[in-house]
Amino acid sequence: MRPYGVGVAALLLSLTPALPALAQGLFGDPDERREPPPSLPQSFNGIIRPPSGEEIPKRVDTLNDIVRAMQACWRPTDVRYSGQSVTIRISFKRNGEVLGRPMITHYREGEPDKANREAFTQAVREALVRCSPMPFTDKLGAAVAGRPFTFRFVDSPAMETSQAL
Image 1 (cartoon, rainbow, N blue to C red):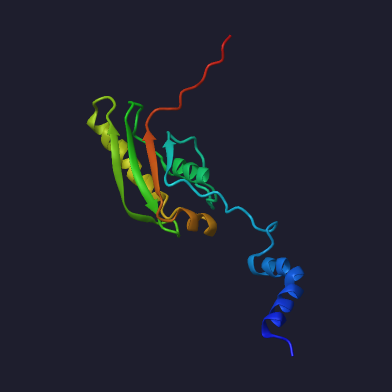
Image 2: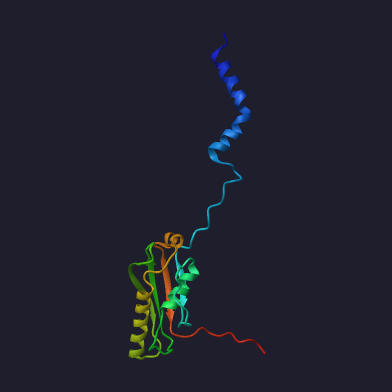
């Protein structure tokens, strides 16, 4: 009769060639393991300038699409360029609705014209209503839900870069 310890040792030695294969089955093939996808930033900033006539997109699938959609939603009609700007912080639900209340984090007054200031802030409010719910794809909605976005609405056109002659 063989001692018990010799039988266990023989069994382990017979499994030695199979151990790497067993480990791969348990932990997956190292070649198949992939790095996790890059994470989204904790917050996202965008500058919204007077619209260029773009239509509100039917589906929003990227972070840049969010800025383009907000740009298309902003339609200041009675606002003249005065250098004013307002920065708001906003979060969205997974389905694109605004989460909570947007917060004004900064306001820069342009030329002192009360009627122009009121028209400007009203146009920003209307843009938020017009863009809600934001038409997120399911994938983007899941990724951005609850994350803060900062939009700076500026009532001046983008500065043109001039080419040297």
